[in-house]
Picture (spheres, one colour):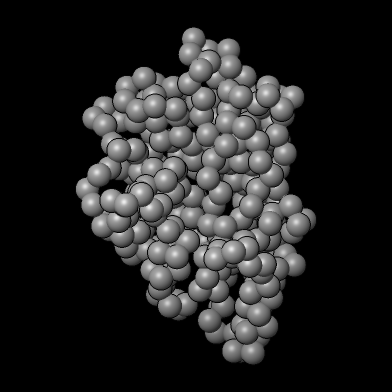
Length: 278
């Protein structure tokens, strides 16, 4: 139920860390597909743990792999997956899911400004929001909310996609609630955005993702003190830099990065509301 720990799919470099809480697998799922519509990612969390959740996850993954290559919209995929669960033998076993579509390589010009250039599509069904890693910062993207798959009938059976700008060098961190809802001995949640920002490597051609995920796993283990009660899944998608990015004049790189740092602060965290970025 996993893609390799590290792999390339088109212009995306993908890395994952998956730590099931129970033997026999769990309900956390993830996948990546190169399709005619772009590179599509799925991360999900089936209610419960163990073999029953594992079987439900497999059925969702099998359907996703067919739909990702034939369904034109992410919202359409989500509705079809919802119907699969709602009509199954266990309709109570809902699935939170996050679906992402990165533009095809031809839509990402080598010299594109990541602010005004390409946009990625996001559908969130009851899943924790992704973190956008850009310019040395980590910020939550706030998608249009929808219930988990299996419960979409509560809002008329549909969901809405969000768009957000994406460019070379950006990274998107997807995860399950085994990460975001992990608590320490006194009940404090794991501060994912803060720990991610602290673990980000310096911006350089040698910057890579494996060290970031390993640091997050170690930080999470330290936070919970060995009290792992839920599956843990982290998926990092990195847009590879266009050839010659670091050979550009420094002023040109700075102009591009300056646009990337426009953001809104919400409390103690930074957030780019995806709906406002259309």
